[in-house]
Image (tube, rainbow over all chains, first blue to last red; front, side, top):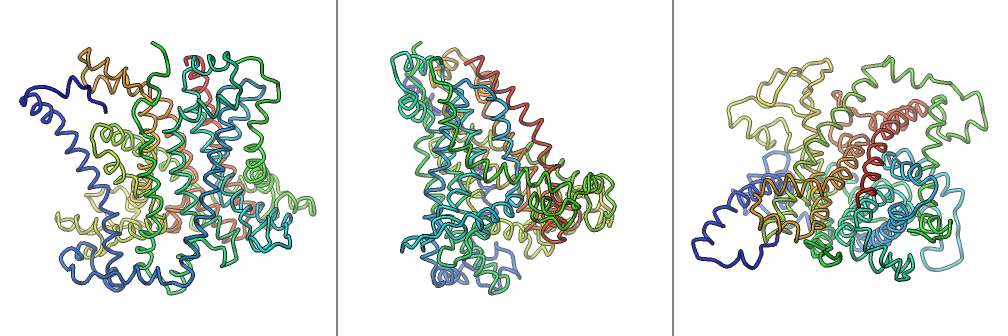
Length: 306
Length: 320
């Protein structure tokens, strides 16, 4: 939270007093963050432990026996054949899916928030109400549709499959659709909270809908778009179910599929799972930190007079 | 705003409309039809067109209400557990996320502090479930929670199996074969859900928090308002639409909660929720009609939730 320049100055006594005032915030925050991190730390330490250790003694023993730790689990996961290819596949699946969801949802949210048309509320209820649909419910109908509508062309790229199971377009569309209800809901709320004056004055000045959308709505809603991007990326990146159903071809398998087959083909290999969890977590965390710069206080500052 | 052609909104909506119709709306209609059909109806609408005899009326819904096979598929327990998830999961996750978003915004290490809460969301749910199975492990040499509990002088609890009732985390009444309203295993599962989803509430609320103009906050401080007063009277009201969005999303997550329960307990020891029971019925037992009826029960919950959020949006439009 911004501290005014005036407040920053002051005698050393003031500085001390302010520090004492803020101390409970720091203590609460750090205590809470540590408490929340216990399972994460447990997972991290387990990922460095030997296979047998994980099931016979608690993770805290790793702290007292640091010499027993090794990187072998990470080596095992990374040296799995085609793991690099699976990483690339995960990227190819996740990046366009995330982009489509944000863009398509932003279009729809703009219409819902700032346009009048008959049936608006009913349509909004239906669209966002679809959020409640469990994914498992859609799998059989979608799979049936994909099988019926498979398009193959004689082209070397994408394995020749344009649409259907085992096609990138097919999985992008599925992920985009599954992400839309939440994305529309979130963005409609943020777009709707923008002040009417800004948009109306732009409209009176002759700006088109597209102009208003790209020059005003999107820049002013960056915190919400950043939050949405973080989650959409994460959900698609960690998805196992949709890939399992729509991507049977091992050439196209993302990391989640690769890891799950790794774990099941060797029995229950918890230690590989823990290492894989941290490897696959790295990229979403980078996105999280990279997008933090859009979480800036007072993004609307100066946009409204008075 | 005025002066648009009537079809302009539909152009903006069309990509979303097409995707949602194909991938979500059509399966919903299909499921609704299937819920009135017999067990062997994996094909849904298309099966009914081929063979109209598959229509069984309200039989599947009667099954849910009468709960004739409580030991195999306890529909009452699943419905009750969903209610428990709905109240506790949402009621705990929103305050935790809000508290953390507000506190973290006041320090310079905001991003690092927030990442501690965010990381559980980034861990794949399979890995998260594995680590929590170890956290809840009965053997206190392995299970973190029981290690702490035995250290404090209590006996170990089988957190994921115990349905002893009445039971609190501190008084172990031992396992009980009957289904009870205060099963410790349900609370243990919900806690994992809160752990995973608090980061979601925090990130979205944090985004909302950044939309509050700094002028308003500074003006209040200059006027001598205390921090608690600012939180209650300025931050909370401005943030309330976002809180509604977060709470609604979490309520819906609670309703369709599947993966966590499925991986951690598989619905055993009466931890089934509607979504896991739906999955068991449809894909394990081959009871497609019954599974579909359970899914429709889930869908029905959404109507009151959406009516509340629409009211909220209408209020927003009148006041902006």
